[in-house]
Length: 260
Image 1 (cartoon, rainbow, N blue to C red):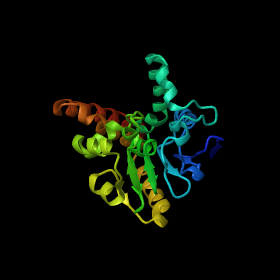
Image 2 (tube, rainbow, N blue to C red):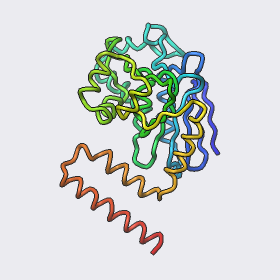
Image 3 (cartoon, helix red, strand yellow):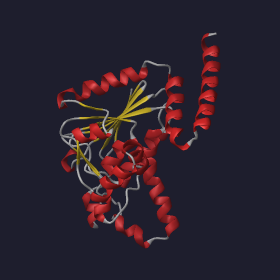
Image 4 (spheres, rainbow, N blue to C red):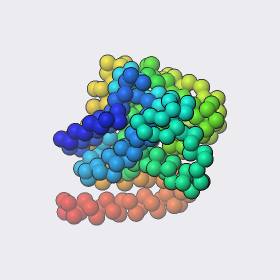
């Protein structure tokens, strides 16, 4: 087992095929900072090859209240510049900086892992986008999602826009983002944002059971299936058929090598 504690408000662990990311700043509802995003990107890059499932959760009653409010309001946090100072920098530098932020989220979409967000309480802004970066979301009845960036004059820029549209459709995604309203657990389940809603006392066991179920099939089969599903919306039907043929050919070859 690998266990990592950071002074940035993260607990990062790897135990065989399961890795865990715990946001650990409960005193500020697990508000996030760019330093946390960079640490998450490094963790994703360094994951051992045997990791197949990643569980993301928050310590305490909230998943994450989003970007630390001090950074939004113009105060530095742990040496991090306030967000608005980026507006004075050249566009290329801003793009590079935001790309670094996005890397803390995008690795959760990689085909070789299946990621699960265990969401209780608030999932706001960056917290909502972190949950959206995961493949699956198990939520408690008090879970509340909100995309607050537009209310602050900003856009969601941590990779959340595409999975939101894929899950709920363009029209509903626009309405959720443009109004910055709350989406509570029951509606999240109805819209497809949540896979399942469970009582708070069952959250950990449900995520454990789901993790074990995801580990049952052969890793290559899950990897190829996730890749097929991720790319399906961008392919024509004929292109998807071709992608399926190619993926199955690889699987048959791997199975023959392993068991033939």
